[in-house]
Length: 82
Image (cartoon, rainbow, N blue to C red; front, side, top):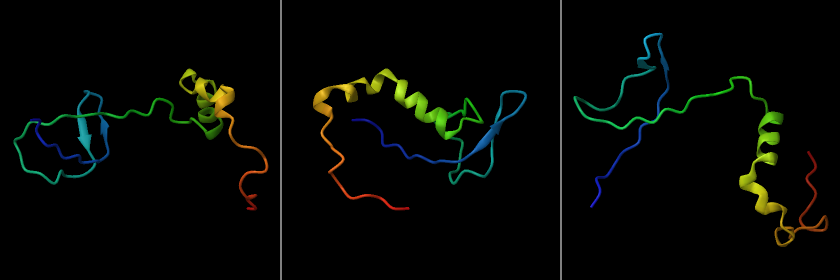
């Protein structure tokens, strides 16, 4: 059987010496071994248009171009008036 894990989300910075400095104290006592996953922002100024363009050209979504995936028409649903 595998070992149960607990996720803790926090933020921090990586300093000039490549050390991870957290913005807040962790709610656990140590010493303890941990697994760390870093989510790095690659493009700090990526706007919504860039994200949409990337999603539209990503081959992972090519299946949506298949005719059998085109199941909705303009008659479906209700108009959204903002």
